[in-house]
Structure formats: C-alpha cells, structure tokens
Image (cartoon, rainbow, N blue to C red):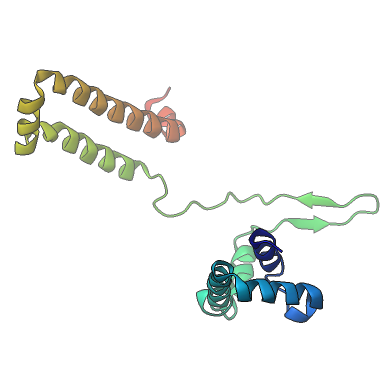
Amino acid sequence: MNCENVMEKIYENYGEEPQDISLLTQIRIWLHLFFCPDCARENERFMACRNILNNDFLPPAQGLEDSVMAMITTQGGLVEETASEETPQTALPTAPAPLLPGFLSTRGWVIAGLIMFVSLATAFFGLEFNKIALAAGMSFLLPVGIIIGIFLTVYGALFIGSHLKELTERFGL
C-alpha cells in the first residue's frame, strides 16, 4: 500500500472501531505506519484531532433540544399538519418571523454611515496624509477621491436597497 491509500483507508474508517475493518487491512495499515514516519505522524495528528473533536470540543448541552423545541412551538414557527383522507395538507404559520434585535436598523445604518463619512473626509487632515501626498505629488489625490466616492456610493446603495420599503413609505414614493 502506498501512503495515499493508507491515509484514505484511515480517513474512511474514521468513526469505525478497528474490529469493523478487515484483519488484512488492519495489518497492512499497521505495517505501513510502522515503516513510514510521515504517515505515522499524520495518523497521530489525525487521531489527536479526532479525540479532541469527539471528547473536548463541544460538550453536549443538557436539555438543549427541549428548550429549542419549546421556543419554536411558542413562537408559532411549526408547520401544522392536518391529515385528510386523500392527501395530507400543510398549513403555513400566519405570524411573521421575528427579526433579530438591531438587525439592519435604520438608525444603526445612519450612524455607521456618518462615522464612515466623517472618517473618510477627515483623512485629508492627518499629518501622515500630507507626507504621503507631498512624496507622491498631486496625482495622489485623484485615486483617493475616487476610492472615497466608491465607498460612499456603495454604502448608500446598500442602505437604500436594504431599506427600500421603509424609505418609500416615509417619503411617499
């Protein structure tokens, strides 16, 4: 067996017990790992990672399933099934899904936009900017201005696109 085949067999049998693999395959893998230090090192790393993921990575949370299912049923998120004689029908929930708190709020977008506008506009007043502008010449200001314009345009487009319904209701468009 070559290195690629051995590591493939090890990865394939990741969750299985050694007795689930044929004896001949176990012997061939063991012999290859005995004589190939690279594969032996890789196997040790793989086994260490497997043990960490199986034991220490995420300990099981007691009662998590029950609490999640209780939250789903109290918010009307389950699809109710009604059985008829011919075909089963499903009724969709009537309540809209609640938004996450602070998710794409208009106030947050406006505050972030103002901070971005002020920081980009005041970049010209820093001492480091003057040193760079003197070294690069006046042709340096054109790309900087274009980049600031692109940032503000993209941010404005994302803001308007994500709040289109609110803006049309507010301004009567």
